[in-house]
Amino acid sequence: MKTAIMVKESLDEHLSPIISSVFDSVQVIHSDEDFLSLISMDPPDIILVDRTCLQEEKSRIVDEFRNSTLYGHLPIIAVYSEKDIEDPAALKIPVDDFIVLGSPELQIRRRIEFIVGRSVRETDINPLTRLPGNESIIRCVQRMFDENGEIAVAWVDLDNFKPYNDRYGFSSGDEVLLAAARIITNAVRETGRENTFVGHIGGDEFLFICPIAETRTICEEILSRFDMVVRNFYNEEDLDQGGIVSKSRSGEVRKFPVITVSIAVVLSEKKRYRHYGQASQDAKEIMKYVKGLEGSNYMIDRRGKHR
Image (cartoon, one colour):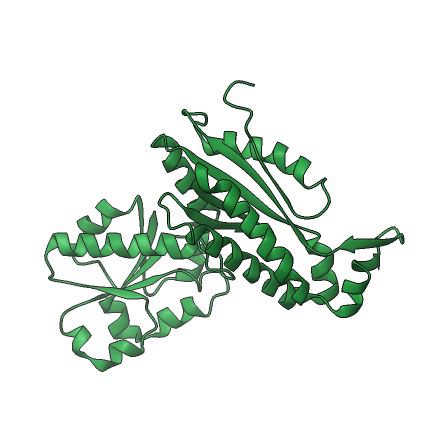
């Protein structure tokens, strides 16, 4: 993790070694420098703004960060004294969190670590579905492989989603994705079992993890519920003709069926997988076959470790 620290002259001598021990890289920028240009050379993961800058500039520096289309999403942490946080004006500065000078060293260290951890989680959350994103997915799958967990890992893909987006627009497409996310999450949650997880890889691709014994039940629930719900997102004309009829780029008239679901499942048994890439590659082969079938389908890989 990298941080950039905005200061007027120098950072508090007691705080400096604590920050250096938490972050892999620390960039100190003075308030009279072109801080946006300096940050663009090596973008940080989190920004700290010292009280000396806030006293002199009020919220100007923070506002400039917030107004930046490139860096406005970065978490901003204020470095306050005890007296600073008593001032109601501190609440008007749009920072995400703060640390207090003079607090015990361990307390400051832990607070920074909590802030960093929250930042990592929030950065890797899909903005539409609020499900964990790709990095969290890989991290979770890999952890379970490392722990030799006997689990099922399922990739979920929506078929014919792009033609739907083209015809009905992105807002309607987002509603379909939200519905899919709720259906998958509820189907997994309702098992009430441990070692479960749902993530949003991106676009119309999702992933879930569940105990092997629950795999078939969850897959069938997802397909059944989605096939029933998705029809609500089409008009009567398209439903009557079995999908969307439109011209391809070559001018050929084609019919794209109503959106369906394809699920490719791999089973991690007896230490079958050592890393995420192996499981992903097997799932791609299965998914290619499943997507060639008509309607919503799932396939569980039972080929075993040696093939």
